[in-house]
Length: 209
Image (cartoon, rainbow, N blue to C red; front, side):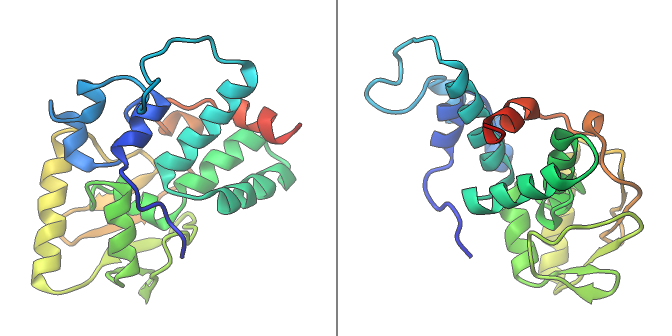
């Protein structure tokens, strides 16, 4: 499966916002975005007024990088959202939020979505009693999620929960049983549940041209 393997802190600087791609490092003073809050490269400090198309493109790139998906997969999500009878932007964000790696991150089982992706790929996640090792698997209401593995894996997950609990909480559409490392999807995610600095309408306009 293709994925980005370059320096992720440069992605935050390029988008001009913290995307929280490095877990706890993003909330410390050592975060490169805090030290150098401008775009990377020789001309990163230059100021200019971006065109409306540039704003649309940057918004799409930002959302792709937050959820760790590449262009082809992101375009497929948009196509599914565009064919639905509901608001395209709303369905697009729901699809991204329902990804299994994102759910593991939202349940506080991982420090970042990249780590959540590893946990899923290594086969430690079970959905409704069945092992699922596909990060893009879409959960649905009433799905039961459980972490299974050796004691060192469970210890790591519990440590992640303790660290994450200091900075964020479990979203309202999920239920977390931290003692048993289980979770449940209570309902579909709504836009107000997604506390991310994104404007999905710009993405809809970009792809609708």
